[in-house]
Each structure stands twice: as structure tokens, then as C-alpha cells.
Image (cartoon, rainbow, N blue to C red):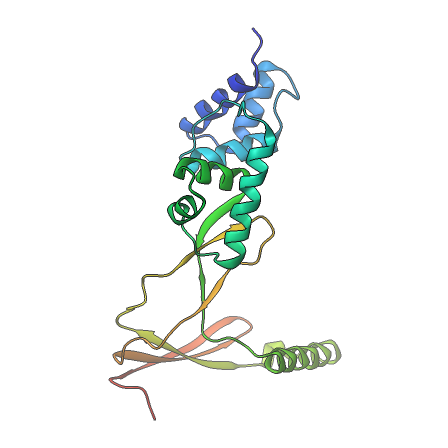
Length: 214
């Protein structure tokens, strides 16, 4: 029995529904039907689509030109607003929501939560950090001081996080994650002071403050 492309995709879906890993799906299909029938990358791409609730294993019978044009239009919108939802894009381009979602998957785009960062570093601050790291590396190469080094830092532990509505952004393969500066949250917080050395944490000292120090 010969399996066409659509049949191979159905086998990948079957293996995914059984809870197999991508590599196990690939090995099982090639072991049963013959080496080289399907690549690991193809299995990974279709498993990702299935996880994103895309189950159409048939090839698009339309010409590639309209799909390419839609990709370009979607890319223009994402360059201006990486937070845009599929429904916003569909309404803006006057196409179906399904078409937008399908093209985004084909473009290897994933809708991920932004990464919280405490603040945005200026170029001078980044350069200063590089300088300090270079000095520490030079000191380490001359004299291994790490076993004798004790580091201390402070961190706010909040009771309530009112910023739980974190944004999501479309991120493609090789793209840097989108960062988002965390705003001031609640006045009810703990101030934790942490001491550690090369072997691990030495001491954690926690103080409860009702309002931040001025």
C-alpha cells in the first residue's frame, strides 16, 4: 500500500493523538513504510500545526501567488503591530479568520506572551555592563576568586500582580522575544535580600513593607 502526502500527514496526526514525541512518530512511520518516507522536520511542522488546532492535511489547490500576497500583507501589519490578533488582521485585510491563522502557521509564526523585564537599559548602561563583565572575566583568569565571592541582591515580592493581562505578540523562527517593562504594582510587598556564593544560596532575609521606601 502506498501512502501519499495526505496519508503521511494523517499518520503523523495519529501518532500525535497517541501522545508520541515527534522523533518517535518519525521513527515509527519510517520503520513501517521505509526509511526516508518522511523527514523529522516535516513531522515537527505538522505536530506544531496540530497543537495550534490546524487539522487540514490537504494541500492547498490554489496557486501560490495569492497565498504569497497574503503573507506579505500580514507581515506588513505585524511589522507595525506585533500584538495584532488574528481577528484584527482578518478584519483589516477583509479575509477569513481561518485564512489568516493558516498563513501565520505557514509563516512559522507563534503567538507568545511577552517577556517581563524590570526596565529598559540604555546603550550606555549596556556598555557599562559589558565593561564590568570583561573586568570580572579578566580577574577570574588571573585568580579564581569565585569560591571566595559572596553576592547580595534585593528583590520585591508582590502580594498582588495587577498586571496579569500580559500582551502576546507574533514571533517567528529566529526572532527575538518581545519584552515589556513591568509597571509599578501594589504597595503590599515583601523585600527579600538574598546572599549566595558559588555553591548556592547562603541566606534569604525577608521584610514586610506596606509601602516602598522614599
